[in-house]
Image 1: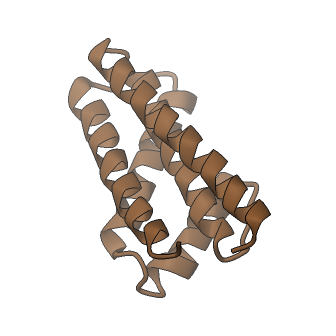
Image 2: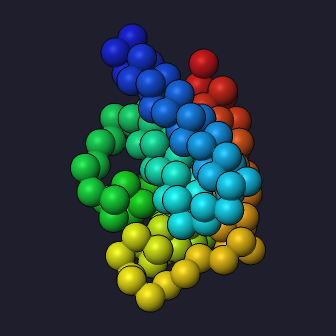
Amino acid sequence: MDANTRELVKVRLDRAKEDILTAEELLSLKRHRAAVNRAYYALFGITTAVLLTKKIERSKHSGVEAAFNQYFIKEGIIEIEYGRIYDYVRRKREECDYTARIIIDAITAKKAVEDSKKFIKRVRKYLKTLV
């Protein structure tokens, strides 16, 4: 990985860390919709970072998820459960951001945040193997 890519990965990792910490804070404040939103963006950020390690950039959310599944899940680099986590948290974020009648409860929000933390931990573990 070249120096520019390494720096961009670091920036995205830092953002993902900030987003997941914010999600946890929002969860403690019972701001469930916002917690799910930040948990998703933590996943999105770290996923765009890991894609950069293969020189892959996608601008759309669907493209990021599809590329992650293609190059990391299907290749057996990351276990399939992490693809399912990404899909679950993305769907919950879309529901609470775009569906007016959906109310995210504490259980759903906590699951989204905890699953996101698990996903981030796994991807960070993979990234450490590249250094």
